[in-house]
Length: 432
Ligand SMILES: Cc1cc2nc3c(=O)[nH]c(=O)nc-3n(C[C@H](O)[C@H](O)[C@H](O)COP(=O)(O)OP(=O)(O)OC[C@H]3O[C@@H](n4cnc5c(N)ncnc54)[C@H](O)[C@@H]3O)c2cc1C
Image (tube, protein in one colour):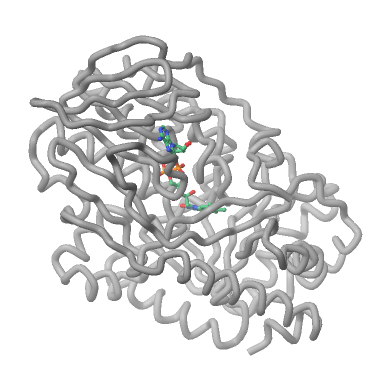
């Protein structure tokens, strides 16, 4: 198992493509965007739609960061329930952010339709599943809060959830019909293609290595070229390569790994997630499962497989699959991969004011919808010179002391939970 994207299922099954050369020239633009994941591609697309001359620089290939490695659950809102967001941001700002992100799946699925992005888009809803009886309280609380802001979510009884998932390891569920799943890498590459179709200039294999302030804007240098632009969007999130003159904001790195089985035969596919909802659970060390278009089951959990205790995580995958779906106990895995999540202390994404530019980061594991929207809104705010259109107020400074230690805390928690599951058998480890 590796952090190398070429080992991922998403790399293997991506049907989208975009033409982009590396930057070997000295060019000028109105706006330069650094980072070709959802945030950067969406910002470039929006800027180009508004008639702005925009350059997008990606260090590697489009979607090679978190956008090409994730689970592909297109959810509304953040991880945090609305009342918690209100408590952290203040009621007015919190309600505004929750309202905006309630529309995130619709925005994502509309973009996919408009630009005909071939990314296995399936808007059949998602299921937040209770991992134990204790998880039901969390779901009931979320159900109450989400209903209060008009979200059409429904609580499923244990029997209903068991039937929908095809596993008796779930204790209930919260169904959100607005949500769905995508092939995440294909969505990122498709967004890049959409941006190019609207006139954005795309450069791949073109890492920004130096950033300098100029009288009226920025000079971004790459190994073989440069971009001079009045405005800048920095969208490198959990995967920042060093840029001289720009200390990237620190986030708490949390590793999450996944494995995909070989496609399920029709008889199993009729029982396991027959409606193809994407799922995750209420466990503190959460796990996820979903199907792809070919009928593979993709299981994920927190932890770093390349870590010294990595074998504990990889062994956990097989036990998780067996405990949830005993009929798959010998079903082979065909791909395994991992990615890094950028967490903030409050689990709310941040926009840093760079002066004539923004940096955005910290979606804390929910960046498909939020990344798409934050990218759009940052482009709009810069072009209209109106920061009030941003989804959150800007921060002037971002320091996160001991981020590495906090990341180690999550890693240790994941290792202990997966080790406990190994010692006691998966079922007793997930019982409350
Ligand atoms: C394993 C995993 C599972 C997840 N599951 C989900 C999920 O199911 N649903 C959900 O909503 N969210 C999920 N997320 C979160 C989501 O994937 C991220 O929030 C989202 O991809 C962030 O997009 P981004 O564009 O901000 O950053 P990224 O996609 O990480 O893009 C940053 C890009 O910047 C580039 N870059 C870095 N430095 C430079 C430089 N110097 N010059 C040029 N380019 C540079 C990188 O190469 C990279 O392509 C998950 C994340 C992970 C890792």
